[in-house]
Length: 442
Image (cartoon, rainbow, N blue to C red; front, side, top):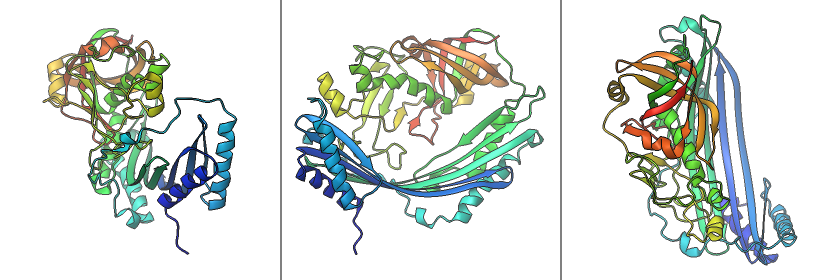
């Protein structure tokens, strides 16, 4: 018997929903295979492999909307699920904004191969995965000062997925993709009894695009060993450089309130500020879903709308939002897309070492440790760790400090941007330097 494809399953589910009384329907179906190997202190700690499948049906019935999902893709289950969704919709209040996107929004899909699937994924063996995880740990324990290492935990995980989406008003699309994620976490012994820890990781669509995985182990160990002897720095207004890996997290906090939901529900500090200056002229950010092998790349979004490169901040001015079809209708605005893809920061000309030389004295933040960021007011207060900068170079480590401010002021203090984006993320942000930042320590 011929095996039904994911796309065919989605088509059949849409037809079934319409047959049972839905005016419109949308179906997403997927299969995902994930494998993970964990290695800890010289031993295999865990190995897991799981293949999952799922299907969701969205129905639009007499101005009402409902969505249901299942992991059983058998035709009889799908028929029952469609009937259940329609019964649920009829029991709900009408919502005039629940509609499928205008078919025009499906048009203009880029005619490029994003190359998101590594054809060699299926040949990756259990022995290779184990060797990767083991090799990362061995590399961590090979660095100078490794006698102070207490524990090393490493992982190698990979996945392969196949997604299909079909709507009753003309959209069909499929995505096949793979990803690979090696990582290491290292804890060390501090003379004062503490056990500071740090980590390193990478991610890529193709195995060959990962860095030397032993370097991940070495980096994690060096980061952790560099935390030994950390103390609180002095409070005051300082020049602060943010390391690329941490800078992505900071930018994410700025961009969270750009969603259509936040705008419509008056939970966004950007409400009414489109076109206004939010940051310094160095705040230049685009959302680019069409990067070949990008971790956030796609030709269409979760609703089927064609993906396009969009400017979010241009020379500090706010230019774009992430607005899905539902909130676009509620706001009376043209929808863009419901979520970010690859966030790309315009680069400067200097690397981190050169930027630190320019700073002279200040702080290099390498990680954020909890805290909060209010998307409505823009106020934030974040725990930070990193290194003091003295005489233009990285000096002793600091910890248990706090960085606070308001995003609407803070990003105007951006004075320099590096040329060193963190490559193994869908958020590619370089070293960022801010002047006059309020930090609290001793």
